[in-house]
Each structure stands twice: as structure tokens, then as C-alpha cells.
Image 1 (cartoon, rainbow, N blue to C red):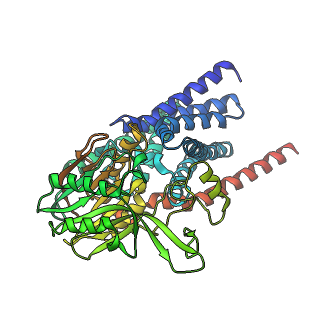
Image 2: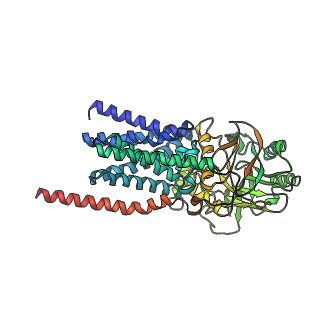
Image 3: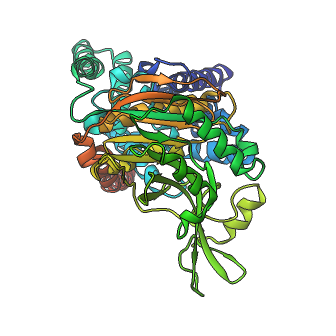
Length: 534
């Protein structure tokens, strides 16, 4: 390979990494994603024209730069974990693009290969949401998290609809840039303008006409940001002091009209799910709520359940002596009476809260714990839940990065949630883009379900986001504070809430048959070449 060609490929990989990561780092730059893949297509074009071998490594480099630029902040939680997450995520992206290049060698018509790329990419994103080794932070549709006015149609097809929009726009614009035939240029120009601008116009119309107060009632909520250093929170600070600090913050802003108090995840430790009223924090919270009988408290707890069995009761159960038990990252909704309900986090963080496929690969537990990860998996629920308060409203608790999972989170609205709450610890990453990305992803869930979202972070950003994805109130970084705000409940169901990720599901079903078509076409092509040489 010529030195000049190598330099061009490296430059294009760098440009791709910058353009794809920009929407995740700089607010309101989502539209950049509509042209971000063009450098990657030019890399493919150069490789095809000049017969460059091992082009996959350049594609891998391009996706690696994207992952590093957009999620470098994982390093501040775990050096080994960040390397594994970035390398594996990059590998999957580059393999999807490698499938596209494979199909390009088989089919002479480019549109077939472009269709295969779209199907393969959307199928991968859809499946990535479902597996235990899941890290869908960089789903392409998340590029518009800080540009909610442009993607109001996520209420119909969700964030993977944004991924589809990005891929289509890039393909059409690249095709336009590389086309010389006058008739085709005019057709491609019309198609590109339609695909790029029609969703924007439709979204803006919806954005400025939607009524954010319809479908329910206006209620008062209190959000608490205790700002406890997460590295000192676990087993260092006494629970009594943390409880007193939290209740003190609540007292600053609570009124008799407050319906809900929302706190971060894992605020209270070691609660026995079979004997919650015996926990000192539970008793203290109930005593406080007796002063405000109309108020519900949604609090994050680190809980456990002990099993009176000899055999292992679940694949996540752990053993202490002769006793089996499960641990949970949970949310509990309670009031001054005896009414309380739980939700156990379902989408667990790989390596931290779950050992992926531990029941099939038991050696992973020791290997991951040796690098500072979890020594076992947490217990979980099968699906999102909705917890009912004493006023008849239901809240959908999204714990930590569950707010990244749109198709999963929508089940809370299906079960009657009239608003959503994100409960999180976001201080692990320091003052980096990580907590800002997490906060804005909640806006995409607000659009998909048309539910106001209350975001309570221990550190990071707490706030309220309305059903259009707009931030109504927000706190600052590393700030001990609480605030009172208002949300509008809603019990209407959007198409996305009702039907979920239809686009990703269809792509997943089409992927294997389309792959079979490519294989058959390749076999026929080889046979045709062999016969031509006879």
C-alpha cells in the first residue's frame, strides 16, 4: 500500500471518530450524525478501487476512535473494564460493517449491500439490548439526546428509528457525492432532501403543537441529590448520617402538597425484603412520612432475600455458610402506612452487577472478581414494573443505566406508570461527559413514552424532563441540594409504548434470511466463475 493511501485512510478514520462522537460530547450537534458515516464509506471506496487488503483494521480503528472519544470516561470507574467494553463494542461494530463489505463483493447492485448494512446494524442494536453482555450506550439513535426537538417521532418508532434515519441519510448523501450521472444525481438529491428534512419538519411541527399538560394532573415532587462521594458511600459513611442528611434536604423544600419524594439508587443498605419494617432506615422514613400523609417516598435500596432451602434457589443466589441469599439493587415506594412495593433492577451492569452467562461459564466469576469486578450476579426481575402511590398514580423506576433501554422501560407505561423516575449514582466517572449523556438519555425515554421523567442522581445531574424531552429543572455537578418541581402525569400510550422496537425486531428477523441470500449468491458466483474458466 502506498504511503499516501495509508495516510488518507488514517485521516478518514480520524474524521469518522470525531464526527460520530461529536453528538455525544457537544450539545445540539445531533444532525452531524447524518453525515458522520461518509468518511467510512469513502474508506471502503478507496479499498475497493485500489484493492487494499486487510482494510478491516482501518475500519476497526475508525470505530475504536468513536468508542474512545465518546466513552473514555469509563476508565475512571475501571481501567480493565473500560478496555474490555471499548474493545468488544468496537469489535461488534466493525464486524457489522465487515458484513456489508462482504456483501459488496457479492452483489453488483450497491443498494442491496446498503440494505444489508441497515438490516445488520439495526438487528445488532436490537439484539444488543437483550443479551446479558449488553452495553448499548452508543446506539446511533442516541446521537439526538441533546436535540429532542428533531426526534419527536421517537414516540412512534423509538431510538432505533433514529439509527435508521442516520444510516439512510449517510448512504444517500454518500451516493450523491460519488454519482456522476445527471439523472441519478437529481434523483439522489430529491431522495436525500426528503430523508434528511422530512423527519425534521414533521418533528418540529409535533414539538410545537404537543400539549404537555394533557392526559393527567399536575403534581408536586421533591428530588434529592445528597452528593455523597460514591467511593466513600459504601461501608464508610454511617447509614444514620446519610439518612439524616437526606431528610434534612427534603425538609428544606417539602410542602403538604408534595406527592412524591425521589432519591438516588442504593441510598439505603442491607434491607431484608422479608422484614423491611425491622430496618432502622425504614422506620425513620415512615416516621418522617407520618408528618406528610399524602406523600410517597421512592428510595433506592441495596436489599437481600434469604432462602430457607438447601439447594441453590436461583442462578444468582449466593451462599454464606449454609444459607442461600440473593442481593438486589432495588427501589421501594412507601408512604406513612403499611403500603410499600418493590422493583428490582433488571438491566444489570456487566462485570459489576452481573457475571454474563455465569451459569454456562462459571470460571468467569473468579476471573472478573480478580480484576476488581463483582464476585457474583445480583438478583433481578424479568421486566420493568410500575409502583403505585397512595394517590393512584404509578411511577416507573429506572435504576441506573436502565434509562438507556427504551424498549424495556416502556413496559412501565404499559403497566400504568403515569410518570418515570431515574434513580442513579453518576459520580463514578468524575466531571466527564458520562453523567451528562446519562441525564439527556432520559429525555429520549420521555419522548418515546410521553411521560415526564424525574431524574435523581446521588452526584451528577438531577432534574425534571417533560414529555417533549426538554429539561425543565436541573442541578449542577457535585452539588448537595434538593428542589421542588412539578410534573404532569399522563396515561395515554404512544405507538412505541404499545408495540415497542418494531424496527429492530423486523431487522433481527430479516438478518439471517438475508445472510443466507448473500451466502447463496456468493456460491453461485463462484460456480459461475469456475464454469467460465473451463
